Length: 110
Image (tube, rainbow, N blue to C red):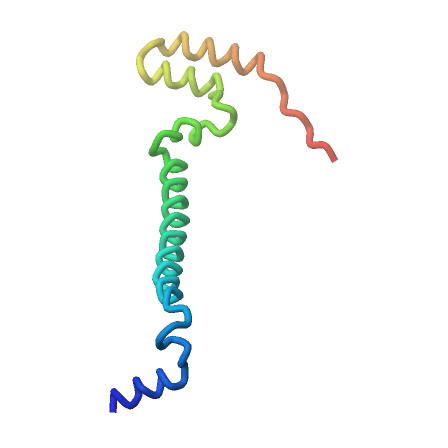
C-alpha cells in the first residue's frame, strides 16, 4: 500500500523523476535554515538591547546616561557626600549654592 502511494505521487509529478530540477530539493532546507537564522538574529538583537538598557554590556554607561552623558550637579554632589568625600556642612552649603544659581525651567512652547 505504501508503494502504491509512492508510485501515485511519482505518476502525478513526473518532472521529479529522471530529470526536471532535482536541485530544487536543496532549496527547501536552505529556506528553513535562513528563516531560523533570521529569527535567532532578531531575538538575539532584542535581547542584547534589553540587557544593555538594563545596565549591562558595553553600552551600559551611555544607556544609563541617555541625557547626553551629563549627570546633574546635585547627583554628583550627593554621591560625593555619600562616599564621604565631603562633610555634611560643606554638602549643605554647596547644595544651597547650586539651587540658588539654578535656572528656572523653560515654559513649554505652544
